[in-house]
Image 1 (tube, rainbow, N blue to C red):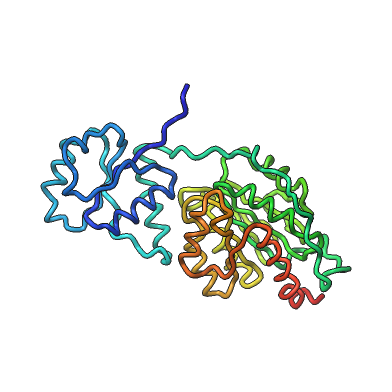
Image 2: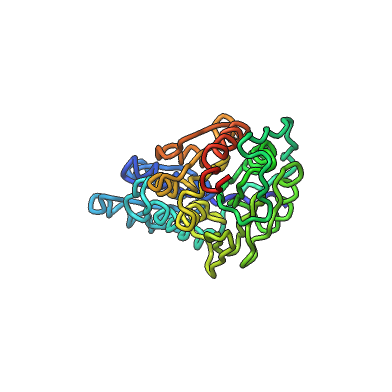
Length: 341
């Protein structure tokens, strides 16, 4: 049996900017864009194109194109969806909701997108030795203490390798914990724990209700329900699914952690498709919370960190090792005051 084909969406819109925004939302959700055209370029041959599984129509001047829309409904051999209206700014909190509505409509009609398989065979051991622990942090014992600083690591396609390289480069003894939001299929959590933990100084804790995250530990956000950590570094679970096309929602994790921890959190966005994290990046910048990102040249897929950079909210970009170096310096300069060490 051949590999399942990804549903292909045909986009018709009378605004160039709207076509671009709709296509971006479709691709971010994991679907394919078969073609994108203004209505005056669409003929009966295109309408009956077998490569298109669904048409998404977004017309601003409905009076001008009313006859076309009627004909499209009569001639099309596949379902037709009407769009969600003018796309909000990427930097706005409304963008993710607009994007999610498009995803929900497509999912109802053509099912889930075919997501790229998570290939952990390409996740390799690091070549570099861990960085040295800064002198300010040497000789201090923090194991077993509730984590005061908890940063979010967001990743998607190509992320496992980048996250591993980052974690393996960090020195033992940093007074920090991490919550990782990795777009992943069910059943891979234990495998990722083994891959990420093999050469890392950090240990992993399951995200069970009430579990506490301590310095030197990591949790992987679950797929099934919304999760965050409170000021006591304890797991909070909510009886609701993650928002958006991917689970866990990196935007949601970032936002919840910012609400609960304030400036004692931060985020690093690694390789990934789509724009998850870009909306929350604006909120974090307004709260003076750091948002960093992996450089495009070192990503397997740079769409996610590039989308965050486009908001102007990313204050540092680097390779995974450069991010580890920057993070180690940041820990020595900023974590000492709150920890009183």
